[in-house]
Length: 65
Image (cartoon, rainbow, N blue to C red; front, side, top):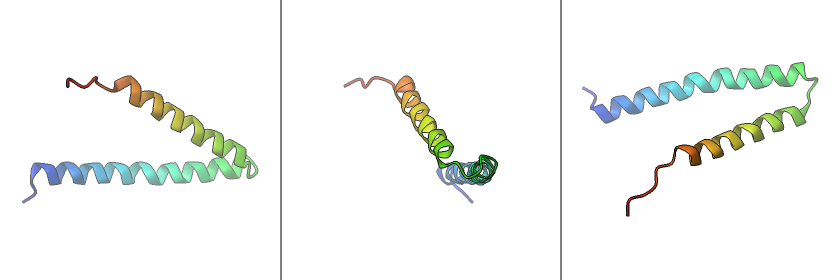
């Protein structure tokens, strides 16, 4: 029998796997349709990193030390 922590970990791994595969195929499709334009792929990656960075600071709770 799985503990709560193990079952949550399993769900998280499954969610990650289910999002990685379509993302990889999406980037491959975008690369092929853009006539192998690396600049577009790197721009998408940079925008994703910037959104993650801003989101991280937007939802961060101040520490109560």
